[in-house]
Amino acid sequence: MKREIEVTEKQAAFIKTDADEVFFGGAAGGGKSCAQVIDALFFAYSHAGSRQLVLRRTFPELERSIVPLCRRFYPKEAGKYISSKHVWRFKNGSLIELGYLEAEEDVTRYQSAEYDVIRFDELTHFTESQYLYMLSRLRGANGFPKQMKSTGNPGGVGHAFVKKRFIDDPDAVVNGRRFQFIPSFVRDNRFLTEADPGYEKRLSELPEKERRRLLEGDWNFFDGAYFSEFSPAVHIVKPFDLSGYTRFRSLDYGLDMTACLWWAVDAKGDMYIYRELYESGLTLSQAAERITERTPPFEDIVYTVASPDLWNRRQESGFSGAEIMYSAGLTGLIPADSGRVRGLRRLRELLRCDGGTSPKLRFFEGCCPNLVRCLPLLRHSDRDPEDVAGEPHEITHAPESLRYGAMSRPSVPEKGTPAPSERSFGDPFAKDADDGAPSYQYLYC
Image (cartoon, rainbow, N blue to C red; front, side, top):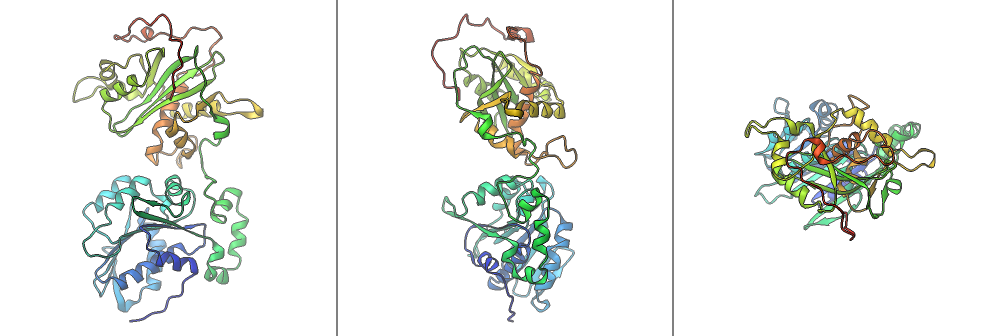
């Protein structure tokens, strides 16, 4: 059986590439979904008995986009669509499965599956953890090529990891695996421009945010960023001597990630983050030990403000997380203000620098890389525009710790006001402070 299907130059590049991971797109109207569907058909024809998976975030999205395109391009005589199983079954034994990953845990539905090609349509709608898990499903002893082939536009929950993985280095080779970015714009799709010559003009008339994302495919413009006030040029400063500054820590603890930040505050209330701990897999006692190990003896840490849930009793031990950390040597713990929106408002105020004034919160260069990476990637929540989106979860830990710290100092202290001592927090492990700090400099980060 032979059938001619005409494609654009960019679609042809997507179909022919032998890269291990490919991302095709960048702007609206480039023919991305058509390329996925046609490429899947060609692969099924060329590799009898192969298995492929096409993913969207929800199944209704598949029914609106991928399923109609398959019905348009897939010859009836080649095979049939089994709607109850969402599978195209071809006469040569090849399968194209249509699936979705709406929640993080949906990946477990594929834990025993094997695929030769997995296709993410609109990859920026997915989280990095979903993508990485599905990479493990590319396997099989049949000798067929194994590829991850994705499409999408800027924006969405996966914007940051897609940009880092494909856009920033469009032809990277990592551990012998080749990555490729194939940019595509509406002007590259002559089928669309000939059938609808006004489409590009309509895109050009969109508001700036949507125009830059959908028409220009601008990956450096992050639509929906929560902390639009943040600017590396303004908020990141060279490390300097912190002698005489009040110091404290903020902690967001979880087994998936421990995010601890070290703060320094001057007499005017200006604050600096000069160190971070960002590590996964730590138990409560291990986290306490790592934090104390990273704090030199001469730093007079007056308190550590931490996640309120650390004061909940652990069923397995009968002790709270705070008590376990106390016993492991982390003194001066106090519970954080749990008001998320209040804390986020406070952070925005601290980051503001209107009228040429300096922000009240800044970060030492090179000393808190995960915090300065995650902070500008937070998006507004779709449910509450005053809150941040909870996905991707990996980028929320360090900013959450930052929020705790900001709310522990809600107002500018009067000049000369003494810092509270550890003993004022009722820490049973508190000891007398040293009379003075050493004269030598310490590398803060």
